[in-house]
Image 1 (cartoon, one colour):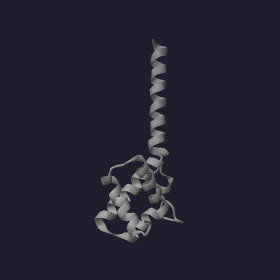
Image 2 (tube, one colour):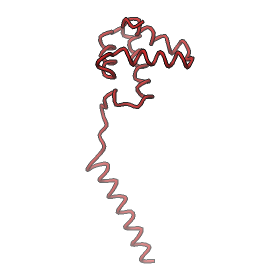
Image 3 (cartoon, helix red, strand yellow):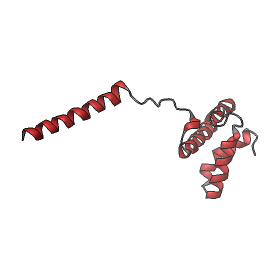
Length: 109
């Protein structure tokens, strides 16, 4: 019984120490990750949100700057790619309209 108690105490201490080191001493800091480093599905959502934001505030320079975070050389490419993919997938017009509106105002269509 004493060996089991010592073993369980060692396991609990090890887990506690690992959590302390992982959360307090060396935490993973992924705050403010660049949009270009996002997974494809999150990049898609980022582009959709940029288009929705533009449809509300009509701030074209801000929308262009946000898209440039995905592709600094040609900010319109990610938007055009998303429009192409979603058109082929048959997405509803309610989702496509803000994308087309932004693409039109950027001179992409």
